[in-house]
Image (cartoon, rainbow, N blue to C red; front, side, top):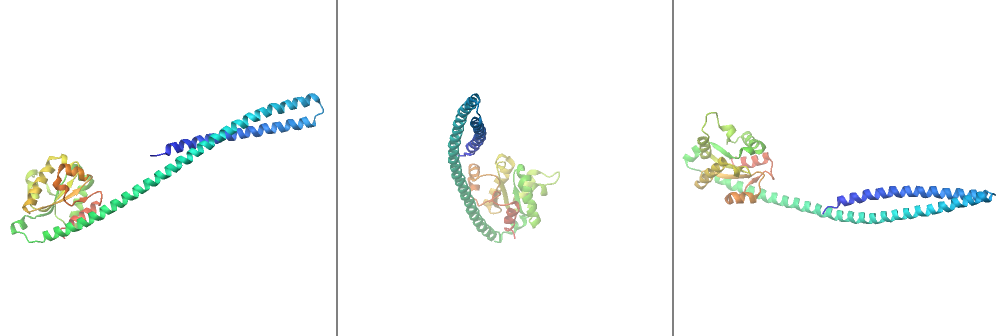
Length: 279
């Protein structure tokens, strides 16, 4: 629970009360000065009427003084009560802040552990796949491997991530089947995708909420799964702004695969991890 609103409100009320208290204190001082002047005048005068008049002034001023002092005491009491409440809320807020700091710290530690575990899995998977990719394959397959990576993705993820990853892979020296790099005017989309799928060593599947809403990426994934079963291509999932629960709902098979994750790695880091498979 957050107590900031209560704290701010109490601070405002206390500030207003202190202002009112200062005003009453000034009134008290003014009245006391008035009483002192009347007493001095009464002491000096030799006139009975003047004496009586000054004494009446003292009497009236004394009543006013008592009223002001009572009001100031009430204000002081309110300040004390509200200050006590303020202190209580500040202590609660301090405890709440400490709990929140601990929660954030624990979450950061969890993410670090998760990232380290993910790194270990990725490293192990890369070693395994590198070993697999080094195993000699039939000549027919060797001739088909015209591309290192086939990138399957939803168009909505192109500008935010996929294009950057493809460009980094190309810059590293990888041969990438990616629609913007590969398709030319007049090409048959279906035929070129089939050729790209069949002639790529690895199928990089960028899984996102948009991916599972699209027909073409799903067809590409089906093709990659078939090729993986045949041993011709290996699927490399990349999770992009999507949770494991969401992936499980759509494809339990993909959820079980070791995947790169854009929430844990930058575009360059992901491209580097992929490129290590073909070095």
